[in-house]
Length: 608
Image (cartoon, rainbow, N blue to C red; front, side, top):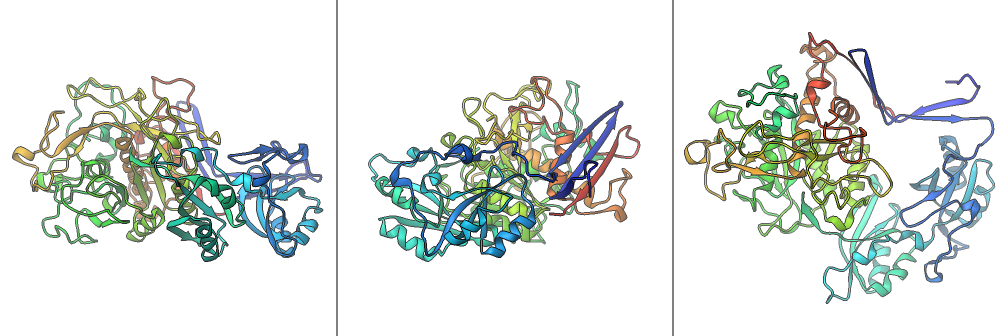
């Protein structure tokens, strides 16, 4: 393509456009669109800085002063890790030319830079190329997380608890030997080089951290943080907005009434455990025979040391979350009262918490891979790290983005965290491609009219991330959410008598009222399941179900639909913002059905 000025134009990555027209108003969202304009001469980058977590500098104005113990010298005979900054948006042919010279491209760094592994001789050639702005050694000082001081759990323990990332081409056996030679204890290594993810947990004395950073293959050193956990009326709010003060009738929701309930969809969920004997999930014919024949659970598996499966899990958190996303007691009672948002969807469940409430040392990429193999294309996560990590782009955040990049039809949801407004969004909800869900209000336990779904809760973590990105993506009701209560091992198969779903807001029996972004996340993820079904069943573009129009939507398209349909909450200003993101999920505001006054235009191209 060519611009009117004669400059070349390269368009890469994914293009997703949604156009909504209602009342003469047009709204556009373009996700993952990269326009690279390259003129005849190289111009100054808009932001010329090398921007890392620990350092930010314009190399042409001078490199930062760093301590001698965190300064390295290049190996004149072997390969070294260099930062190569380009003159502007990077063209593939530039990378190819450097690769032909012997350079190996590893990790991207803002702005317009890569870590490139090459010899000192190759470096001298590369820095003279006309499109290269600067080349410098990737120094040990650049590898240290400024929050490393938080790495000690026990003041009596002389060692720090770290997570150490390696460049994905590293010889892990040799690097681990070097770590052990420093007195380090290597624990729970994670090696997925195809995803460019190689890391390990490491216990080491703080006096050895500088030496650890001097290992060339080490690219980042951060503290190991603590993980923590982060429906009755919810199903109405995420489908349609009502102003009535009366409880909607059983099943009286706009998307369900069209026949979209989650049929033929699978949602992956990672949490504390699943009470598979609860009437929202129970299959009398396949009680513990989890798989495709089970009416609700295709997988119920414990991951990592310590996690275990049992009926009546630790505190009910996982069962409550699953109930909001896809619980279905209508199989037994015939009523959709208190069913989940996508109640006909099945669940691929990962249990990552032991009976004492402690997280196991699970590998998140393994969980995602298993869920994907089960057929799940939406994944809900109501867990994350503590407030000490606010804004961090940490390990499972990287895992989530890497998996989505390699599986472009898989969309991950994370709860924003419950330490707001004092603390910002907590990882892995800081990931770049996922949907991060904040909590709006819901109803209280006295009356449907006593609700505040258009107000942010006072605990939902706001943005931004450390790198300035807006979070959350959207919100969903997270306050006073009625969903599944685990029964502590007591059989509650019929949703009847003392364990009946209550028609009021009273907790008891098989229902429990809970509050948090943990409750908002599965509601939004369930809405994502319904959006996916809308496209896979061929409702677009005619607004009626037509199998010949069916297609598999990309994750970015589903995310774009949720964002475009999101409602600006009346209790907020400056929409979108760092509290509500793009607003509260509302599917009726975006999905087109025959007879609607609005028009929905979608382009979904998964190139790049």
